[in-house]
Length: 309
Length: 326
Image (cartoon, rainbow over all chains, first blue to last red; front, side, top):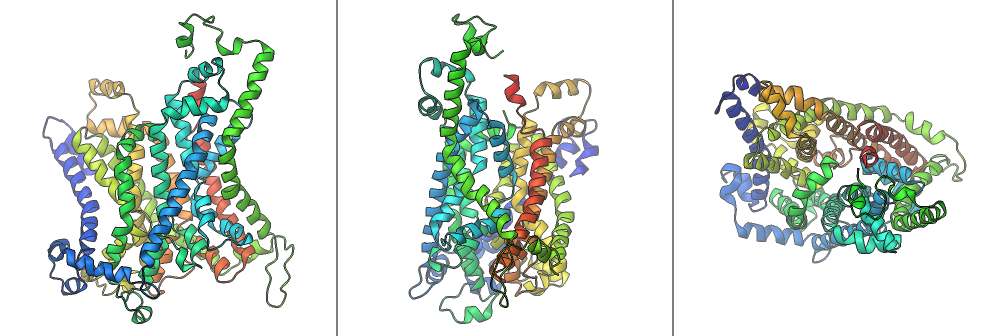
């Protein structure tokens, strides 16, 4: 990276420095993107093609729709009886991610507004606790959460997972920043002079100007919930039917003859690399949809979220 | 300064502002404001209690209990016994050594990558820069298990696009690649790939916050692109660099998914209790020793909370200064 340094000295137009900078950036981008292209191609290849090694650059030559249809029959056949566990797991993930996201919004919007625009005792403490919870890695709390859910006998059920995911301090922080930067204090004062209560001010003045931050919080919490691994692993492993897709894919890996010949030998379906890649690719589609929907808000949101106003 | 917009309406004397209202009325509105705030905070507070405060408190309480054993099934107050069980466990120090062995390789590389790429993106205005930034972000979208399966594909000695490289080095099977000795490199690859893009965007946001006049002034003084990056931009984004470093450090202590699944694909070549979180998981699910699992969680919690406090208090990114300016 630093080898662009000497070239820049005595800069004119197409200098050595500029060429070096562009080359370095393009090479790194290729190193980031090519593996992903190869991986997606893998989802549309056949195990025979993979073994023969005749599919060409990144396996792109062996890509076909029929391969994916066959791989899907294997993935969908996984599970007791006629299978169908995969779609069940995706459904569970959808329920958890959506319910968790809605709860996160319901909690974060009023809380972020109150922290940003109302004065009350305990405000600094709440803000500090929110920031602390936000920067803390969430897996640290998984064992304590498991002990809590275990104490009320709800291990293996979906609702505690969704409820826990509803606690999303980063969302509260985003809303806080949003109102700090986009809603002047005068607006709150004006609403008070007009005789609005604090609650009505939130609903009639603050909420209507929150479209963008709603999209941001919904996006980030959906992604966090969808990709969460340790929490569902601890809380849902005991119930095959209630697993999420993230830990479901772990089970598919465990059933692959690539890594565990003994388990795989007892199965009707064969999950080789193309099947695992397709399962992973399919599990990413909801994220892709959410990403594309939220994209225009994300681009504008970068300036709000990252630059602190 | 902020009261100028109100003042021009001429309803109130400009200098006074909202604080000039009479004392009893101010008292009443302050009370209503405070009550309104707590009502608005209620759902968030409830979730905070359920998902953070209560489990932490409960874990403390559990950690102070005695673990029931076959000989003595009764539990009861055990003081710090469970902490002693954890710390004297033969695997305890090893899990931290494992984590450090990864962080020593990963953190410096990660920081150089984040800052270097963010500066490169910032030095490339227009479409090219934003396209590159988007490309760097894409792997970040594949976080967690998806990133892991991608890496299984990349590491596979015969099916990977890197297969010629692996065979050149002499790796014939996944079991030969996924070994204890290679863990720092493998985890560095996985974590760098999945994490660097998001942080480039954060640090880039910091760079975009620097007023253009500073760069203009430096250019007039004869600074070239390299001087700008090294002497101007780098010092100005120090808070973001510190923030990224500490967040990633805290992240290191809670690694779970990658070592847990690497064990699975290496037919057990990696220890089941490779990382501290895995040891906690083993205490809870294999040994059913909940007090020890709780004690280990609290140890990790204290470490990551301390890092968190430093981030929040010292990074200068989360202060109330903005508000005081108003």
